[in-house]
Structures are given as structure tokens and as C-alpha cells.
Length: 62
Image 1 (cartoon, rainbow, N blue to C red):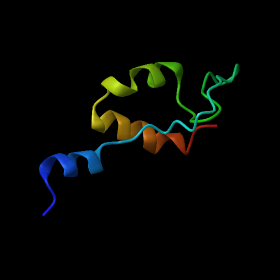
Image 2 (image 1 turned 120 degrees about the horizontal axis):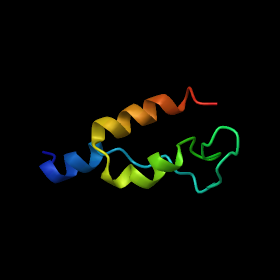
Image 3 (image 1 turned 180 degrees about the horizontal axis):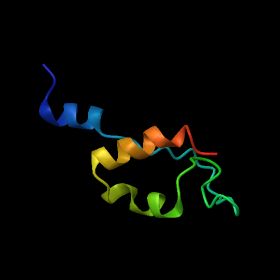
Image 4 (image 1 turned 30 degrees about the horizontal axis):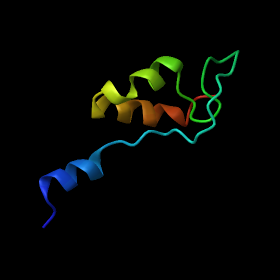
């Protein structure tokens, strides 16, 4: 049996940060994780739904 807290941790979206933190001047996105500065700053406060939407959008960002 999986305990509720463990299950919540498994479902929790991890940060996509790969420790290459530099904003691209033109796109205004991090060259490492492709998030905006606002998304990076707000990540810990975002709901799981919002995090998952951002994670889903990252693959389409250039």
C-alpha cells in the first residue's frame, strides 16, 4: 500500500531546472529549462495543474 503522503510526493511536479540558469535576451526564457523569469520565481507557489501546464508547454518553446 502506498501511503497518501508518498503518493502526493510522486504526483508532485518537480522543477525542470537543469542548473543552467541564464535568460536569453531575445526570448526572455531560461536557456536551461525554457521557463520565463516569472515562472521560475513562482514555481514553488504554483498549483500542480499550473506546473503541469507549464511542463507541457516547455517542449514547444524555442
